[in-house]
Image 1 (tube, rainbow, N blue to C red):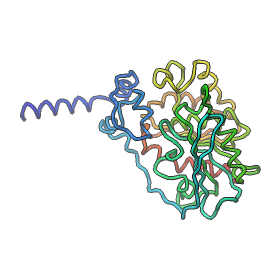
Image 2 (tube, one colour; image 1 turned 60 degrees about the vertical axis):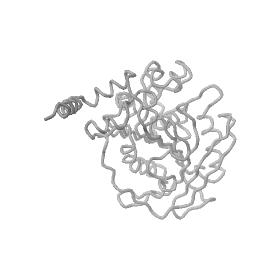
Image 3 (cartoon, rainbow, N blue to C red; image 1 turned 90 degrees about the vertical axis):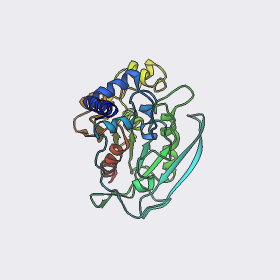
Image 4 (cartoon, rainbow, N blue to C red; image 1 turned 30 degrees about the horizontal axis):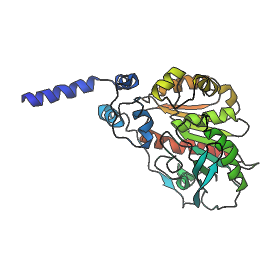
Amino acid sequence: MTDLAAELASERAGAQRWGRRQVLALGLGGAATLLAAGVTGVELVSHGVLPGKYLLDELDGTCSVPVPPLEFSSLGTSFSGTFNSRARNRSVGYTVAYPPGHRMGDELPLVVMLHGYGGNHTDALVGMSPAQAVALKVDGKPLNPMSLVTVDGGNGYWNPHPHDNPMAMVVGELIPRCQRLGLGRRPHRIGVMGISMGGYGALLFAEKYASLFSAVAAISPAIWTSYAQASSANAGAYASASAFTANDAVTHTAALAGIPVRVAAGVDDPFYPGVEVLAQALPAGAVVYFGNGCHTGPFFTQQEPPSLAFLARFLAG
């Protein structure tokens, strides 16, 4: 073996001895190198929480979780638009999707889908469009009919900031707009769902507005357990320490009593410790899934069908 070959072999062996959690710890310590990443990973990579999806995948393949082929019925209609949000002080985009066989004017349950960090209403879901989400077949069966809306919420973790309140926008502007279309209007119900930053937001919305939301599903929610931890990873997530306290999804879980809750996270997700704490605080009856996976697209896509099916089941009736 040449000296160069021996050196490369030694480096590879050394890399294999690194555990995934050691690499995550390196990232959490702020020593991460920014690598190219899609929207689904940008919130972690850009703030030094992860050393990059590529490096994680290269270590042991744990992030490559199996994703069954997605099956859809013929798609229903969908439309996109914008409105001027007084709560956010800007124009925001949104998309409304109808399930197969339904169209504008039909009255249906509503799912509010919250995007992750760096995203917007066009990419709130991973691996599928809003129209596909409500046309999804799970275990070969169509979902109970429901509509879905996505909207631009910015990067402020869906909690109020000075001059930008995405929570007030959703509750006071977006949902009334949808209800005027017959979506989520009583007796039909409203659910909320999100991935990563949006998963945290979905839990927060259900806690703050328990009388409005009838079910919640959070995939890989971005849960921090202290303001210091949150601000060191993303200084813009909360406006202040008091804002973190007021919008801490873990300490306000009692408000979810009586609301169907589903939470899913990968055991190699850097937010996993926070989600573990959240799981312990959730009211009895909450559904919590922990399995192989990271804070990456494959896990998000894997968990979208059971999450949508969970909401469809509880929003029907």
